[in-house]
Length: 113
Image: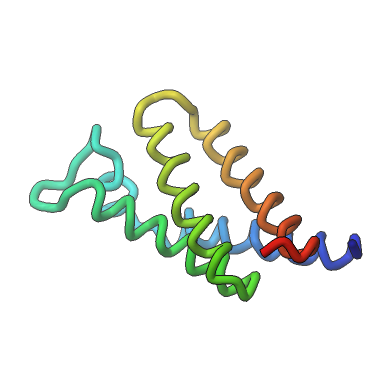
């Protein structure tokens, strides 16, 4: 494994995460994706799924892997659901998201996906 390749990929995945969680997530989506703060007329799971797909798309674009994009979509939905349930805080939520990026970069560099 080339350390430089891993670091570059990991950094780009973290950049994509910051992009997806902040500028690409407006207040409507941030509130409505949480079933504790629903938006009238819009099911929470539509907004959480859309938010997760944005993250999956960014991870897929960065890695060039549809598999990583699908894994990211699934894990982003699951991790945000933990936060909605009050199981994780904003800090542990972000740590779990970044841990996923570490795993995705490792999988790509090791040619496992």
